[in-house]
Length: 346
Image (cartoon, rainbow, N blue to C red; front, side, top):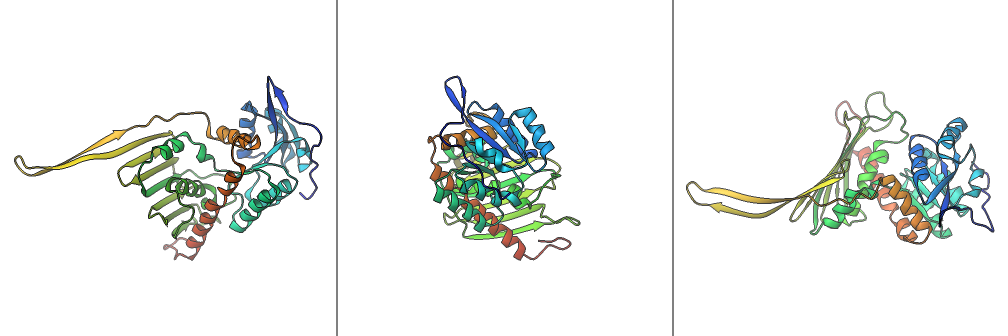
């Protein structure tokens, strides 16, 4: 895709819905994730889908027939859009993103933006220089239980244990670090309050006959003193999304799938000297209320709309993109330099 993208001038392209204008969205990428984005755009009261772009024109047409918009195999159709969601293969993100941003088009791009922190920085620098909104699809940020967790923490974080295991996906173009683990890296940075790790150790598994790492484990140490142990896998027989956050006075057991959190807090401990000496401790179990405001992917879209309409901070959102990408790249590098386990490749 090398053509210049014509931009609308002189009039708004928003569609009216009652007294509220809907932003006109284009979607680049009509695969599995693109289908999800098309659905939430179509369901939104803030947005409408006007263009679906994919090299596979019949697939783009199938999505357009279901959710609306004009199907195309080229970016020229985004000329009528107010913003674009990019859910194309990761390898094409930089090319597509630079074209859109250079032309002043706001972009919500699926994670990762790229598998190189330098390329991520180039996209962010371009967005910053052009003052164009750029948002990365870290959808777990909009999981209701994550907000409940961050609001509930009232003591320094000591350790985070994160598990993100899934059965294998048929169409993946990047290692499990960029596909799954980056979500938890982003969450760990938000929960710990850190922006970088002091030390990173990691190992990955590339199954026989495969080209990509399908399992990754890493240990991160942060300047705050916190430590995180993360595991991501596409080799699991069941879907698992959990975090165990230990602070100096409580443990938070988080299920990201069920969107619930249980807090365990020791409140007393004593020795009993009646009869034979015994030790007794008491633990208070608290289940905070989780306010479910909607599907995380839909909430992510609404936050992007808030950025476009000035209700959320464009610059803060842009600055939040690089840290998780930099740390994911360090995990990949640490795994590559680690000695492989017998019969496996690191």
